Image (cartoon, rainbow, N blue to C red; front, side, top):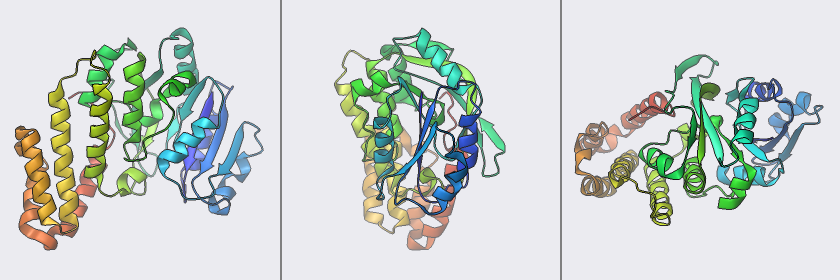
Length: 325
């Protein structure tokens, strides 16, 4: 099993992440840590105590590349039959790898397997848990893709992928959006059956400095991600998907893009996204984001700071807990 750990800059939780790999009951793993940037510095010092373990390797990209590029390079650097990516602020429970290797060995048709997860905060306290969204088992593309299109039910730290599946669809993560995980899972799910484990054996950390919390222009990135999803689905006409869910998600992304514009004081662009949202899915008029959009239009630049703070709080509450909707 190749365990890939991308890192960038300050990594205050990386010790917990590495310790969770070392504690695995499945011992046949290699951990490659890739620092996105120049080598040395604080991260190298943090990693020094771990590098005496021959299974743990550290390298740097040498330049500040995108997160997607760092993920792609990590996958390419390994050769084990299975690949799992653990971000430097997340954790696995001790049986994580063993459970997934066993499942994929018994289900050779599966491209990847995932599970539920817990959420933890900056002090490593458990704050919430995802629902177990499926019954344990295997789901073919016709059954699983409509679920994924409706809502991304896959928590990044819960996934293990068969290397041959990555190679079949192309192991390159999408550079154009922060939601590059969703695009990859869709590519895999369109090609291979997907496995689900009805357990919560991964911890996803929600904190203020993570990339998902600090990324800008989230609305436009979501629109790019959904456009890519539509293009992928067009290549698989045999898989029936309720397009209303795509329209609903796209309309919501337009509202998010409008909020991005309002934070930057561009009311004209915000109005354009509001109009596109309503044209795409008229029921978006009662979306929970609409009052914030209307308030932002009314307040103009005076409300930009309050709007940014409100969106930050909402993101903290709604990030990554996967539920049935």
